[in-house]
Length: 569
Image (cartoon, rainbow, N blue to C red; front, side, top):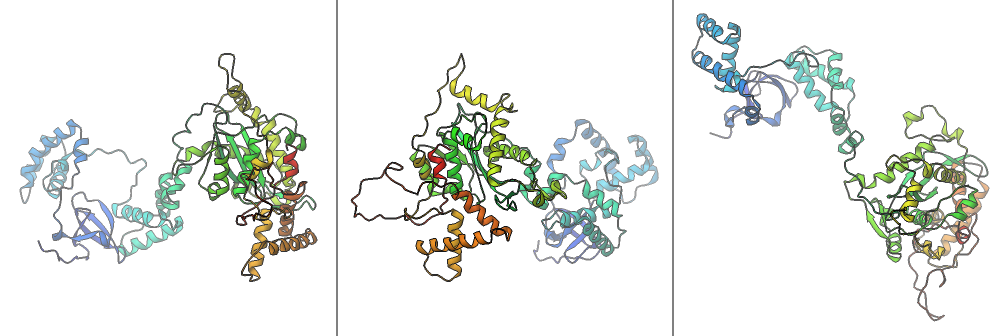
């Protein structure tokens, strides 16, 4: 056949849509049309690019093979019995009333049904499936509107509501009315349209309006983290924005929400350590959290005046992290290699590998939501609560409060996944039981400073005074704004001194100034030792005094409290 048949788009023209012959009922727009399928009488809305002229396509059988397979043998036998009566009648141009009456008596149906079967048999081209008995499933839950209205509603909902544009139901109602007016058919009521929208499956709405990832909110995470044999075999780490505002230590004015980095032992569900800071997650916060997890915490609890025990220390065999840039830093990679710690990143597309630490974060945030100044987890949950007005805890007080939650509550409460408290599980895993001895406690890290330094980016010149990561970044930004082509350390430290003087003077003026002051104070308040990377802290090859030191690039630096670290805090 020729391939250049014209596509007739006038009302009543026959076209091919999805392999079936259809008749155009009305144009809904320049690119969409209301069609009626010749075989089934079903009304559909089709796009212009999906239509083809009738003479262009060889029509396949409109009956899918799957329909034949699903038919029960009784229904198939009944269709064959009907075909023996209907086939000769369908061959006639006009079916006499007497013949129709006789056929109705033979098939135990009404004469009207005989004429309906003849019409369906002719329209299908003599297919046996057209004579299969159609059983009604009842009208409950189904639309009772004429097929053209149902077709227009379905197409409009798919085009507007189920799209990333996320049109509102009122906009869908308006568009249905417009399309029905163009097609010269009666528009359905607003209630009917909204009923069709509300009947859509929730997972389909989320997927088509918000994307495939949004569906995870309604889909349970499949799978589980692989089992581990003993404590500290695997530690999961992750970050979160704490759902609580903290205040400045001096003015008691709110300065913002801090970040929490936390580690959890997969075997026992014990919290190995954490780091809370006003800085966004970085390689520094990862290093600080890991150091807190590996070192013993006796002096740390004493400094915070927290009663209880946190007997978790030692290097983990493996840490599992996500794929954030802070977990791909050179400092973290080399630090883990230096101390024989495996570094494994979460497989892409397998969220259950990080489910343990994420559930822990959710548990901690539930406790945080009881604090004054909480922001809760979303705007709806927060309601009219004024978080800034109610904020009361400083960053240091929040750290102490989190420690109390961990030591005095979380570790001592029965864990639903273990049916026992995490701390008891940890102790039994290391010390064993009367029938199964354990491997014993992990070795303590001897040189605390060296361990921490191995996970932090270095200074270029080690005789410089203490500086926070935020101060370094902010000074570089200021120097670049001044048009400096080359930023050197001397300029950076001079700028930091000016920033500290300005912040100290303006500490009570603005929220931003209070936040800058708190960032510096939290990192520098108890620094008792000058930064020195000598042979005791990190062994290096012996060099002559006049051997030049080839410095590494000035990278992100966060000054840690070496006074506390030296004292085991």
